[in-house]
Length: 572
Image 1 (tube, rainbow, N blue to C red):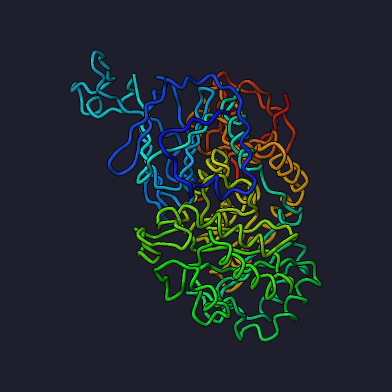
Image 2: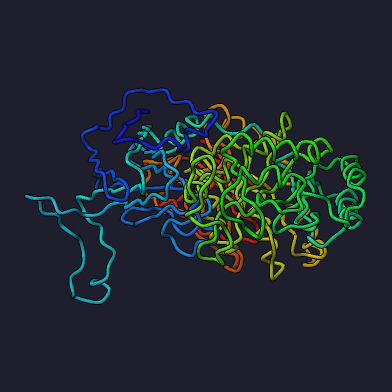
């Protein structure tokens, strides 16, 4: 890994806020002469060539896209992306290629990545494939152009640090990127079990009945989550128990005595009725959200005030997990968040704070938790986020996108849960539950249901079997998380990460490696019981459930028809 510095880089960048940042310089083969740096009126740009057969992955949690060659991605923070143009609630200015290198751009700005365009170079003629007018299909065919230049524009900045990372496989490269941040998080074994989030209008007695349901129904569950109804005021937040929970300590003890951990929903916009509002207001941005102040978690004052309150009022009373909502942005979905022009006491501007909000919020809650380990949830993360024990989720809900999120998350040092949130049919309930069983966090977010969803859909037996399967997988997943912590190897990876030399994996966005040697190929809800599965032909595979070895055809593609989830174990 080697850092290349251009111009005058900004001070307030992700590495500045990364406690475990660990840059150890080594030689790389990538030539410095490839880079062309220019200052612009509104920022700067770095240009470099990419190979004709180069494939580009990463750039954050891209739910709408997978391989980015030839595309433009603008890495702005947006809660509900509707296309594959780069906006996401977890943008990361790090990409990796199938050519043995990746690059991290150390910026919190909304950088623009043009992933391969032809440039007018004097004395050189570039050739474009396709485009003849023999037919409409030929006229508008996707072009595999050659002699491409990648262009990365960083707005407002007068310079940038670029880290070039090399390795034999994409997994090797991503692991080094994760170790640059300090490695993956240490998570407790219980956090890998079922997290069940309750209907938001329930009171403490109804939540207790739900806890008793799990213990009396032979369905394992480790964590009970509460949604916005536990607050006296939720938008913005007071962080105080509502009258639905008249005796919080007794309620917490009831759940803890029955072996449950407790996770509370919140967001970072502080209501005037919050006990610490007046204290934290001077250490906040100059715009309000839902009438609440936006704490500047880049300042030690705001972090201490926020963390101290959470520690004394919640953590010390038995709360050991938090769901940190609304810390992304909403420029295209109602505009509820703070403007890009917002100024913060730390010197951060609105776009930078949007990019860093989740990371700084997570750090603050980790201060509150102290020595208590967790695996919690968050709506926004960005660069160098591997060390934080927070799993991303989304307000979007397309199941195909959710599966793609599982596949894509491993490129960027992120964890993602394809949570179950609602279903229209029994089939959808089961298909979505199958997917969360083989993910980093087993999350059922039933905030929408005045009841237990699988009871409503009359599939309790099927779901019980799936959840028990999850618990059999926990030792394997815990070992994978331990490796994530010590080596940076993500617990879930796209096929192309482990099988980078196999061109057949380059476009596979609906299968993934789970732990070391398990290949998962979910069937999306509403698509029937059939799908094609590619099993990399460089390995031998067996059916995960039966142990029967799979006889692969030459192209490695098998057709499956099953109500179960297709899962395979690599046996050599």
